[in-house]
Image (cartoon, each protein chain N blue to C red):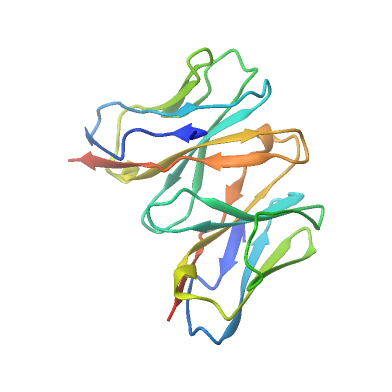
Length: 116
Length: 114
């Protein structure tokens, strides 16, 4: 079974609108971390936001917020007020396992295109 | 220099060549990673170094040989590669206990094997 599932291969959003990118995960660990990365066409993976499994509040970083629904095992990324520069691949990732032997698992990504 | 740097950014090599990829992190982290990113496949973790010791080797062919001389530098030595090894190779670093052990990535080396 897939550990990280991103069901949207591609998404379009109008500039200045908000967009939600979906991510579901599968783990039996109690302690884990969830991450979102942005990868522009240049190739660099840019860290956006982190959510710990014990964090009660949803993480926010500027225009990015993570909608964490633990019971549903979902960790959707919300980008508010989309900008043309937000066009990129977005990857959801999970860190699981004991400290010192962490496993990082990445999803297959969602390609976001922001329209002017 | 800040963050994680990788050189070269692009590399074209023949199947009989020997080359090395270099990664340097300026974040004071204690763990470093090599990933392979092929088209339409999730990121594949290749090697993990923690405190300069290799702690993970995910069944990577021996034609890929990592080296971590200190906590700031990581190399990937390549020899007798195959065309299917063409991919984007990403280096990352993290610090134990910091922000959930978030990994910070370099810009990658795009490798083409002819």
